[in-house]
Length: 135
Image (cartoon, rainbow, N blue to C red; front, top):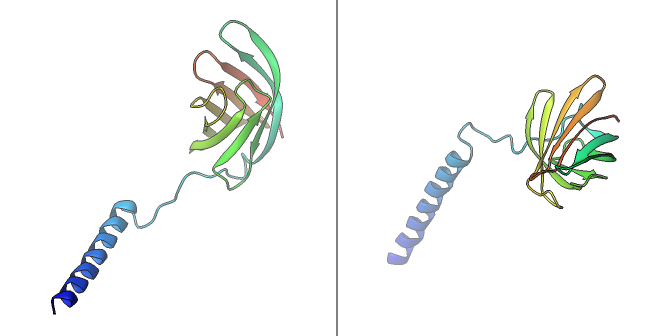
C-alpha cells in the first residue's frame, strides 16, 4: 500500500544520501584525518627560550610535550602556556596552533635540526619567542 511505498522511498533516499555524503567526505577513497605527531618530533622537549612582550626580552625555561601519534600537545613555562593542536606537518617542520591560554590562536613553529628542535613562538599580538629545545 501507500505506507510501504513511503518506507521504500525513504530507504532509497537514505542510500542515495549516504552515498553522496561518502563521496563528499572522502573524494579520494578515504581520509587521512588530521596530522599526527610522528616519531622524530615525539617526546618532551625542554630548553631556554628568549620571549618578548614587544618591549623587552626575557629568558624562560619552556617544556613542549608532543605525544607520538596524537594531534595535540602542551606548552608550559611560557607566557603563552596552553594546549596545542597540530595544524600542519611539512617534512622537518611542524606548525602547532595554541588553543588555550593567553595566546590562544597564536602558533608554535617547530623545526627539527642539529640534534634539537628549533622553537619559534608567535603568540599573537606582540608575544614572540625563539630558542632551541632538546629531549
